[in-house]
Length: 228
Image 1 (cartoon, helix red, strand yellow):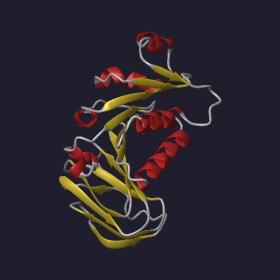
Image 2 (cartoon, rainbow, N blue to C red):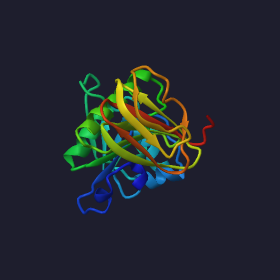
Image 3 (cartoon, rainbow, N blue to C red):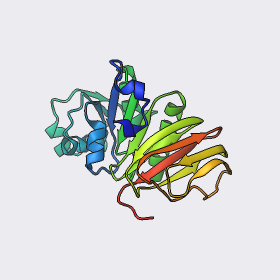
């Protein structure tokens, strides 16, 4: 699971407690995704339960207002422990699922179905919620199987990407001192103003892509099987 950008000391630790959150966006059961969710505890958020069978997962909890779960899905998982909320709740089903995972001791998260949703506002809210968690020290990755996103914050991080994987680093602020190594177009201690397309569509050379940042915040999007 090293390619999730978890700290190496976490993965072998007895206290490492990763959770998979099943959300309602797109999901492709790639070998990479199956490896990411292996040996994790699982919580499903409403219609995200539809991904469980394909991924071979059995959630320990199903939360939400259940407005996006089909009658067939609900009938299939009648014995699944649930926490049901009113449709007029103040939080999204995904946020409720994440909170349930943190209450259960989660210290790393894989958000499956976080990308490729039908509504851009929901997808953007998931990304910003993930950024806030990452700023608090929570290792977190958003994925559809074919696409991944992870926070880029001050410091250094490594993400293992197959050779020729297309990726972009999208600044959410001005970026100061950004370095990107082991890629087709490297950067070294570069300042990138907010809104710049300089870091759009790069390519991994294979193995760990190393990113370091002095200040600012960004999201790294990686695309598997995509030609630049």
